[in-house]
Structure formats: structure tokens, C-alpha cells
Image 1: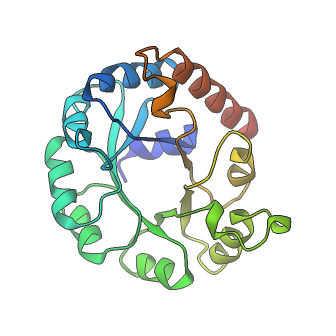
Image 2: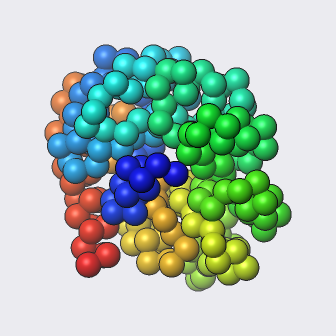
Length: 219
């Protein structure tokens, strides 16, 4: 993993997971994230304008742009060619991972079982996405996904995880408190409803609050 991205993840410990419904919102959203102290964004391939948004933002020097919900090698190629600096996938696809490794692009496939973690480990990965984090929990009394992640991570002490799915300001610190957590992915600060009017101030406010929460926790 390039030092610049690794440092961002290690220091900020947050990845905003972005669904962009309008290409015209791309610049404003990026500006709001940077203003909130989070110069990082995972643009998910869940809307028709996602690839164009990645291409539009990839040339900026003040923010790292990655692609999420990448399902296969073809999509990975399209995203990387558009300028994506890292790739996130909901599941573990070996061809996709190998392609990104050959292009020297950080890739974080989703895992939720020991079998998938072991397969990712044996493919040379040491950072993976834990997905879906909250839905993977077996009991509310055990802290939902945190208990499962702790149990799964125990045999794989070299692996670091990016829990994503169902995480918000309420349970953020529960995941950051785990030694195996590299960073946390979430969308609560970048939901389209927050800026559909074209006003991105709420994104900046929620992002700044999340960044301060994560930094205060680490301190």
C-alpha cells in the first residue's frame, strides 16, 4: 500500500463511502470532505455517474479517490483507468485482487468468514474490508459485529480490517477500539439527502465531528 494512503488510513481511520446520484455534486462533496478534515472518498459504483465522478475528482491533489462496490476485474480496470487510487469490493474475487496487485493498486476485498480471510491472506493481502459489519453480529448483547470481528481476527494477527456496513457515529468508537481495525467505512456523513439542495455544510459538519471523534479516541 502506498505510504500516502496508508498514512491517511492509519491517521484518520475513516473512509467515507459515497453514493453520488448527480455528477454535479461531485466537486462540492469533495470540497466538503476536505474542509471537514477527511481528504479521502470511496465512490461506489451504485449509480450511473459513479465512474465519471471518479474521473472528475481523480486529478485533484487534495483528496484520495477510490472506487467501491467493484465486482469484477473489468470494473476494476475501468475505475483504475479513470484514476481511482484504490479499489474496494463487497466480496473476495481472486482475479480482481490479482489484477489490482499487478497494477500496484491497493485493493480491499470484503470478507466475513475465516475461509475468506485465509484466502485473502494467502493471496498476499494484509488489509481487507469486513462486510457487512453490523449484520455479521450474532447477538446484540455481544456488540453485534464487533464480537464476530474480534473472534475472526484472532488467528490472523497480521491482518487489519476495515469494518463497513451499518456503522455510524453511535458505534464508530466500538469498532475503532478493536486492535484489528485499520479504519472504518461509513456513509452517515455523506448521505445524498444531506446535500441534495446543493448545500454541503452538513457534510462538512458531520465529517469534522467524525474526524475529531476518531482523533480524540486515538489520543
